[in-house]
Amino acid sequence: MGNGLMRKKKKKKNNKKKKRPKVSRNRDWSKLPPDVLLKIFESLKSPIDSHRAKTVCSNWYSVWKTCTNKPPYPWRIIHQGDSPTVEKLTRKLPLLSKTSYCMASSGNNLLMVERRLKFYILNLLTGRRINLPSMESLIRGGQVTFKPEREWSDDSGCFFGSYRNDNVSYEFDSVEWKNSVAVLWINETTGDYVVAWTFIQHYLFSYKKGDSSWCNLNHNGKSLVLFDMACVNNKLYLYTANHHIRIFDFSGVFPMEKKTENPYWKYPFNVVEEPWEYVWKRKIAIQKSSGEVLIILSLKQVFYEEELLMFYIFKMNLEGCKWERVYSIGDEMLVFGQGVTIATALKDLGDGIKSDSIYFIDKDVWPDHQDHDHRVSNCGVFDITTSKIVWPKKIYCSINETQWFVRGVSY
Image (spheres, rainbow, N blue to C red):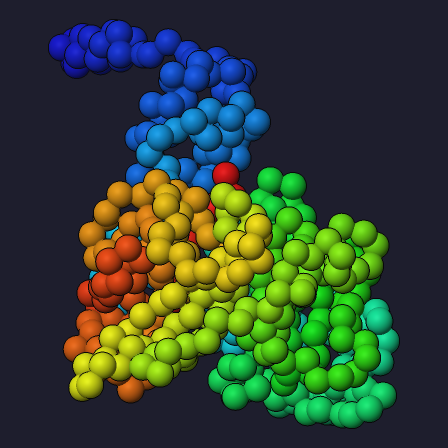
């Protein structure tokens, strides 16, 4: 018994020796030295952790911007299906539901739509959701209203206009939605954003943060056929089917079309393809470094029995007012259809992923090309300087839809 008491006392004494000094919980983490913060940022391997770290406070964000190992690189998003593997450039996103349809992306955000035309913006890194006003409310600009076919219908709705009525199917894999053009621009520092989308080449709706409702930009009711749209810094660029570039300014209370300030207004994109060139898709993008408009063509070249998938980039010479082909975009990269180049000095990460490249999916190129028989995935990378295409390896056979996504481009 005595020995037992001695053992207990000895054990208690040893416990006292192992106690650690208390650390103050009132330490101001925002005042850590820059060199310490840099070591923290450089140790973070996960893009999500990096994003969370930069949002701690303004001091952390300032130091984070000086970090040299944070260039944005593209991810492949899996919308449907499942995969047992997780790769560096592939991320599974449980936030995306099968009833939602992705229309556009900007930075860390996606523009999504659900049945009854319920639009929202989803931040993939934080999970934050911004619900946009109902299309069933009053639409500014007049001439059109949207109502469900029946009060509780989950199948379709209808646009009612002064000149016509149009059915709106909620089946997002229908031709009407596949041909719809949409764009999202968001300033991740200020939180300002602009959304625009088209439907059946007749309707063009827009919404800016702070507006009370959606706006109808096509108030005259005429047909409006667009190849593509781009948006940056509160300006919406329309690439029309007659090859004109129209610009709307969203900095005021109501979107205003700019003609006198539009250097492209009198000079449509008039480049004619050669007989051996067959264009599949046309897109517009704004170059990050210069703010100039780029026209991107997806096409195939046919020489005798050989076919090559190609992408051409054109930019207007503002002095000579002539559209010219561009053979490099330097330390920038472009996701086909996203509407803005991304400034990043990105070295080759493998699978062709680097700067001066165009990232695309199989639907962006000619469907009958022989590459489709041999490719190992539905996401491709086009090297602008060499005109070579790399198809990053397939991750799992059950995946039926993916797309490129570039996180955190608004540094």
